[in-house]
Image (tube, rainbow, N blue to C red):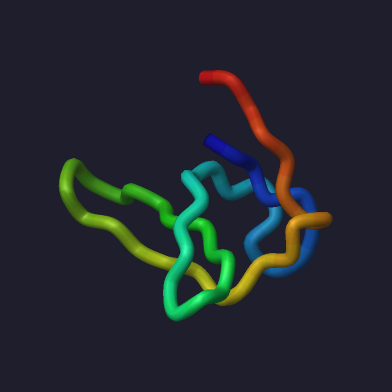
Length: 50
């Protein structure tokens, strides 16, 4: 689990996924309903322990 620390998606919690070779944060809005954000650089995410 990570939190986005910079940019338009700041403060969003999610998990990291690789889509088409780019790192993105996947957010679960509802059970089983996932949304992938735009590319997020490694420097803009922080690992969290939930």
